[in-house]
Length: 130
Image (cartoon, rainbow, N blue to C red; front, side, top):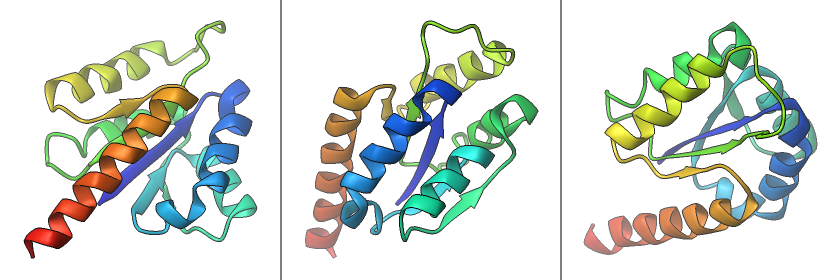
């Protein structure tokens, strides 16, 4: 399973803490991320993360390009709803693609718990079918 980790600057600490708290589960996934977020996750966990460009430099679009190809199982995108983002059109495009391709998307800690539980259940179902 491939999972993306993305966070706006003011939400990076929250996402890294969430991943750290659930590190054993995240070890089961192939992880990718936008640049700085991925670096922070790798620095504060034992996880390996494939890093794309930073969000404002096109990283959101790189990850979004994986969705139509069926190469993404879930996205954890901790957004800052109170700060304008210079790349808001890219963010909106990624969110739209999640809707178009039915990709589970978590934008805060509580939705992240639900998406993580869903992905774990989906992974277990795959194992039991094999």
